[in-house]
Length: 464
Image 1 (cartoon, helix red, strand yellow):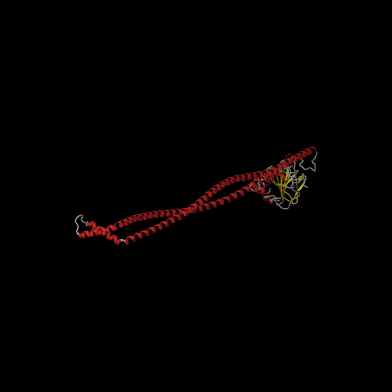
Image 2 (cartoon, rainbow, N blue to C red):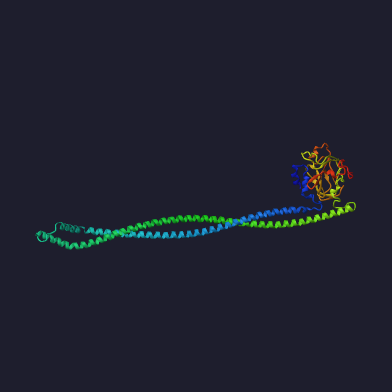
């Protein structure tokens, strides 16, 4: 109640009392208005706020579910990628092993070629040695052949010297030439074979060297590819671990949101049940008050008011021009006059004497009793029909909130100092000042239409 009063101070000094009325004190008597009387609106507002919170939480949960679904798809894709990478790694490892085997085979073949070449070289050397050892005979044979070729013997007429030389040459050639021919043919064959083998070995060596170079390049490529695949696999495993951690957090958050939604649902149900119970209690209270008011009206119509009544004897709207002022004194500021803050006064000021009794001018329930800022002790009296009487500036209060008081019953005592707000500071008198305000709903009304003598000093039959 008091925070609402403070918010209205900026616009009008006495509007706090309107705030009090706006909080539901106008609708029904205070003694029958328990704390649950204001609960239906509060519970309904709380339930609506919780429903809004539940809807927001549910939206967050749906977004979280979509995120979790996307996370699951990402996890599945990463696991597939990792499976493919592991297969690639296995295939690369097999290829590297095959490459190592090929390299070993190529090394073996190169070694065999080197051995074959070495054997051929040795054979070539043996042939050269053999030819060298027969070089003298061959030279003589070749020389003889050359002489015969240059100076062939005559066919019919020969000298004895020529005949002897020819015989010798013939004997020598007959003995040597067949052997030389055979050796020469064999040597030619060996030399041709040797040349072919050397050529074949050189060709095979080049082929093996190229194959070895290709195998080495392939091995290097496989090693680089394996390293790259391993790096990709490690990155994918890191991402997979991160996605799994994120999935765990999403699952945990989802469980928290589901728990929160369940809690909100339970609280909403409780608030709705409480609101429904409060609504029924309010309806019962209103019906009870209506019965009490009807009974009071019947009693008032049939006889004098009962001093033990618990409801106003008369409708407040029917009491215009009949009420005494709450205290003895002189009215110095009336409704609508300048209130000292640039606004019209929403009540009136009554100058009293120190120690003067303040009495309830009408039957009603005490809606508020206590201090308020510089206004001194303040009372708000619920007179029924939505009317509130505000009395401020007293020093002591003799009643309590929720109490039903009768017309003329002492409710407070004036002090020795001036109080009742900023407008009272502009008064010439330093005597105690009672502020009086009557409100219908949230609107202030002129109190003068209820007093017995609007122009009198405020003396009434109960001012003793």
